[in-house]
Structures are given as C-alpha cells and as structure tokens.
Length: 91
Image (cartoon, rainbow, N blue to C red; front, top):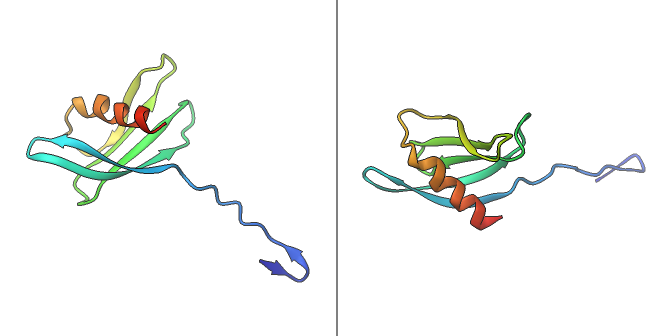
C-alpha cells in the first residue's frame, strides 16, 4: 500500500497452522492448531476443536518436556502426548 509516496509494508507474520485430531472419550475431536509465541517457552501450540468444545495449549518447558499450560476442563492427560506427537510430525 502507498500513502503519500511512502511504501507501507504489512509485517503481520502468519502463524503456523494445521489440522489435528485428538482422541476423545466419544470419538475423534477435530480441530485447528496454531503455533504460539509464549514467554519462557521455546515452543507452544494451541488446539481449538472445530465444534468449540475443546481448547488445549501445550508448551515445551526448559527440560524439553511438553506441558499443558491452559485449556478446557475436564481434559484427558493423554491429549498432551497425542498433541505433541502431531506437532512433531508437522515440524
């Protein structure tokens, strides 16, 4: 875009985004994953289910372990590992 002879560059950086599926108690839960930039974490990702029932944020701690740091309750503890495995495949 040009404004009064000045070139304005939009520096919106696109987030890494991909589809993922987590295993729920009643079947698969499809959603979208976005990478996040969070202070004190080398990597972080957010899963939001397409139907809006599940939200999960995981981040890698300073010991290179994935931790759940936010999300809806209740949640299945296995989701952290399942989610992290899908992130590793995409990267």
